[in-house]
Length: 401
Image 1 (cartoon, rainbow, N blue to C red):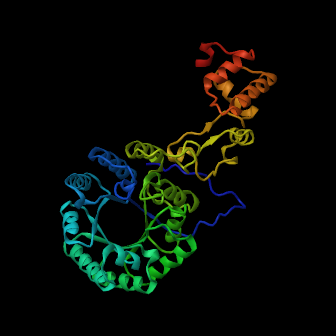
Image 2 (cartoon, rainbow, N blue to C red):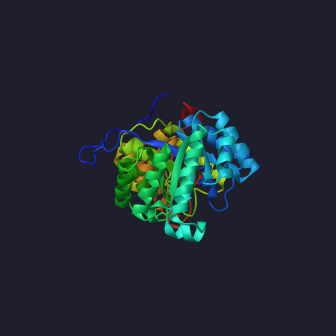
Image 3 (cartoon, rainbow, N blue to C red):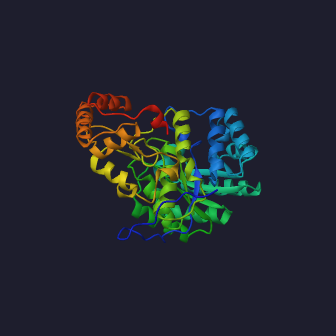
């Protein structure tokens, strides 16, 4: 596979790219993503999404919560047997959950327990001591079975720091391979989260993973801060779907690591747009037009100044280090109220017209007026405006040539 890359940073910009050396991708679209209100993936949906994630080179696929139902168990089991990516199954610190995950054949079992006082007392109705005991016993059971163990202190960012470190040291001693730090309620900020991950890394020999939520729109930023602080991996979901406002976005995280940090994730980024479209369809959650990387407007230009610049050189008003080709998308020049003559001329020529300067101006006025009425200017509209303005058109044979 030949990697499609963007240009190097331009001189004078934030061009320091030595903050991280590597960053792994743990996808939780099929587990946390499916917990989006109203979303339910069928068996076939899960298999299709997992297949694309696997082909793209995703390091870990969290296929689901095996104990949840027979159908969920079967889907997780079949994904584990059919993919080369590491497959992960979720389990509470409960024997039945762990046995179901192990029986499903996943290589990694992700076990979790609440560690914040509010969740320990009002959700689990347990004590801090009981939490530590259950956590250690669960890690030991998973390791005895020969599976890779990931442990999560749920609601870590609202957990008493001293107690959190106690839990981390206990599960480290029990042999966990990974410790995932979840910002379960999305209350972290990048600077605070980075400091937290640095402290966690200093108290464990296990590899550290982060799981961030988007309640304040900071999930991807927090995930990247965690990687900068020493975490080896971030949990993400496609289109950022997940509980409440969702998770750190797969596409944002991967492209930030690839383009802004200039670090090779090993992911085939050219299939990101395809993956996003499949998840949008199967989840029933529309992707906003202004969604970074995969939204319809991500590489679209309407403003006359922007469109004119992009026609001359796309790096003028796009990041440069991330191109539409890198994510399997296409650049679009959109016509509307803000369209300029450069864009109109370009589109007319594409359609086989040969306009004069005055005709371009006339058609541009029509486009602007039409767009100002909040109406979408289509190619058919543009051709109509051109014909009404008397713009000559090459014959069909010439256009085909």
